[in-house]
Image 1 (spheres, each protein chain N blue to C red):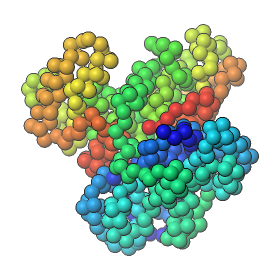
Image 2 (image 1 turned 90 degrees about the horizontal axis):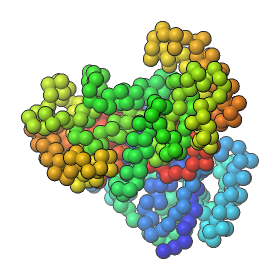
Image 3 (image 1 turned 180 degrees about the vertical axis):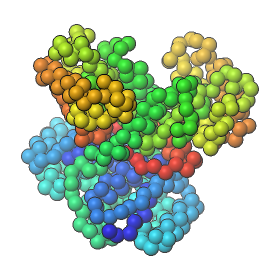
Image 4 (image 1 turned 45 degrees about the vertical axis):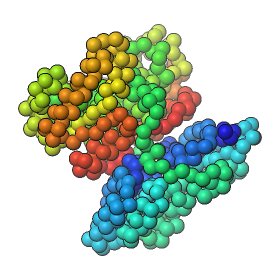
Length: 273
Length: 273
């Protein structure tokens, strides 16, 4: 195993773009150990020189050349960061010239546009979607008319985090419906859900994994018994088949992937924040 | 104004990386109109050819060359997408050769590693942080010992979305403390917060903006009066100064930026999910 290599996600904004790209790149090199740090809001040349010094020192301390994944849009800041001696990966630079040629326009290098201030309208939509998800998390006091999507599943199969991700990142009004024992016994959805068939998406999960999650939440309850989990999951999957609801197993899938699948299955096209 | 140009974020995984980079790039070209679509899970060459056909058709329909921001790691999929005739921007390609040279290792092009399955431990931490944020959103039944950060602000200044973002993206256990009238009258924090001084971060907001937000929530209440908002914000800012709590105005700042500032101010270094 090689030495641990320091990687810095540097930006004049939040650093989210640098970290997203950098993380994706690093996952393609499995034989390495990395120590990653995010350095956001490097918004002056002076600050960039300070940061370069810190990066250089870190590389010297670890005895290996650092890597900088840089999403600053100001070329002077990028140049100053180069004084660190790190391998510089500038996430925008390779694409600016082809885009300028294609679009017939010079880019405007304004700082922090990507994850910075948004207009009031957009911000509002996003916050309203999140408030909707939070208010409609119990499946009880719900007006499903306003929902863009209704996730249907047994308890602890991944509904809540997915709803919140959909709201926070895509402004999707996502509601939950936790399947009750009654639903599962009768193999049918309640009438108030059937009126919204086109918005329904089922989540399922491996019963053993569900048991682990429930056990952590309510140790040694009948709710957390493997038998209970197996019975509920089998009944839910039967119901999804009977009602022809699209379904995804969350067992080996991240929240991002579940959200993407839900949106592409239901044909929801939204911006990403 | 030019014609609206179709932009496609294409990936063999969720497409989050492609969309993040693409969005950042497009914001640097303000004189253009774009119509963006995300096409995730393009995980076979056959599917890539179908997608290329769709992209070509869209460009022909709009009479302008499409742009593809592509984060597929499989070169055959990328080649197939190239048949669309679009301007191809491959977000990883420029960085692979320098990284391979620096690391002395060939990249392994496994699909969907970046936003795909994570280990159970990591997933658990993330979900636990989110459950923590949801459970500690009212400022009432709180054990602040487990909190990494406590956001302090008047009602509707941005605490809840920030807490949830911090939990969902960084696994930070973020709690809220809504300032009460009593706190604001006495210019002091309650004793149970003073025990956690190093975790406190204050949010403030322009009173006019606060008034808009509250008005939407509870129209024509005394809570939503501009006078109330002005008084509460002024008292909160005075209290933050008196107690030397770091503070940020959320008025012109995105949730991502607030979260980044909170983390860098309090010295929290976490992975981004």
